[in-house]
Length: 501
Image 1: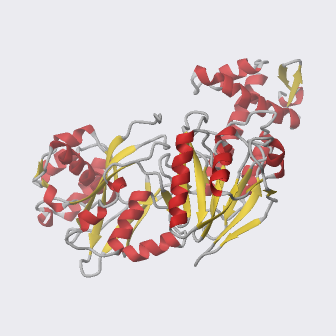
Image 2 (image 1 turned 90 degrees about the horizontal axis):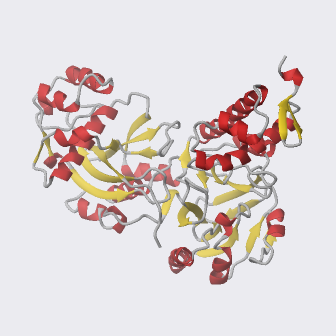
Image 3 (image 1 turned 120 degrees about the horizontal axis):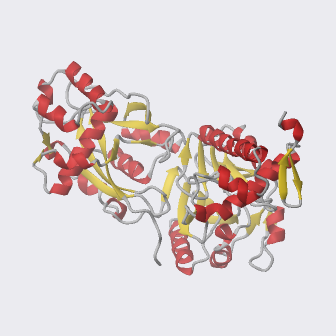
């Protein structure tokens, strides 16, 4: 099966270590406002710049490797002020700090900084740590080279708040414990590297870091950004920009499966085989849970139910909608708690969240603060609200309801999990209210039909998406009518006089 996906861009990341007798690594937290991996804890790094290829690197095995080494050293210097280069111990620290500011302000290139200071980049100062490719389910993908390096004597890390909000030195085992406690979100390569470092640093560290296929370019299917909360993206006939729907497997000794979504036999087989590996490891599937009855969320339910012979549960409205597609064995009540055993355990509280669909529910994992949000909040684009199934009033009320929860992260049905949950929810609410304000203004200024409103308001949306935008406009207009701000007469709309005086 051909999986449509964005082409990965070249990137590099580096694990800086200090104190060889008691190794600590340096990790950073990404800002909640970022489009890619917001609120996620990672290692310093970033995307390759075309100018990186102009910087000479000593002892590099290839021109490609030299570019990526130049990239990662530049990114590390930009983000933390740490500079890995030959002769760095003789360089004035105040001068470096000043040059870093010039680089960040765009007043000086990294190449010119190296020339001015007489420093040389050397591949021998870094240790290869694998090469990971962002899975196809993400709208932005990177082919990322990872490296290890040691902090040069006398240098300190300093984060200038922006794309990153903080950095911290931490023992690998302690970092792993923070992840197990649900305090940080880690992408698969970060988690693998920390786990490997927690086992010790030795001469075969590169071999251990690259011992899994994903660390040498194979596609990542198992994604565990919180302990015991597995994400397995499957290809589905969903709406762009999404291409996949996330199936979640939560728990360890006993687990539940949320939204086995794909109708494609090959994808169903991949998911079933993955779950079979968990079962072979002594884990037991309890039941299948559904967030709502949309084709890109329930396409694989019947096949997986047959394969595992376990019950399916969903909202009562979902049970009514299913028909003959598969049997829903039981319903899920609002605020019902599903407890799963384990040393720390998992407690999934169901939250009824209509708006995108009348039968929509989310699952709030109370220990970690993670929300399995279905299509209430997703990791790419915006959520479709399509009347009569969709209702904008209900949708905004549902966003406000989950905003009251002590959330830390959002595990949406499409795209990667996100930190900064409350920032994201407020962003969603603000976006909808801004659209509503612009739609009302368009009606006040004389747009009387939905296509006319779309033409005025959705100037940021390609014309091929205007039919979909019309459904969203209808949802907003229905809300404005309910709020007493717009009147509908035979398919035409007008603002009430009191709102224009």
